[in-house]
Length: 273
Image (cartoon, rainbow, N blue to C red):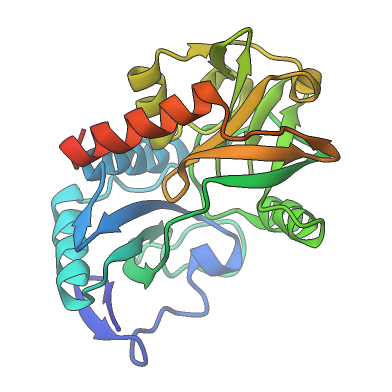
């Protein structure tokens, strides 16, 4: 496997980042995960725009997006596969121990891992922890993912693939790595970005392509929604057939099935929408 690290391709065995990289010592970094189909990235422009927004939000130097594009192209060419997870990681770089950043400049890593298409439906759980819709990192896709690791571990232990959070005022927010949609009276709704959820790329496309409404929703809406589905880079649109102990028989339901079909068709028509 070939990985891009700070200006060029390296073998996996020789690619090295310092143990004092700020991304490792304090989680000072951002990232994007991009779906790659037969060596071609999906929605790369949107992902790079969000990478730049996250860098500005975290106070990191503006990434050279032309270099990131070159890195992505080089990694995809060097590692041919049918369906891949392209990961762009951008950190504060070599720094002293502690929260202060050093002056060595940022670290850029682009890597690719093979993946498979997700099942049409999945189970999710809810967790008691909350997203802070007013936090310093709200809306930024940072590498500070320990809370997500913990919640996802709980989900896995309960036979689910995702954990859903409320925000601090009891509204439905998001999953550890996904956005959530619900169907009420046949209409699709999803929490607004102001709820504290990440402005997901797939979420935005699903809203555009399905006409879903952005709505403040109480967390307990999951107990009465007719249908629930998730969106993310690698899930695309995925139905939910169980929330905690509540089964949603027939998933994907009609609204979700239509959303899945529309997303697949539109995504196939334009790889960089």
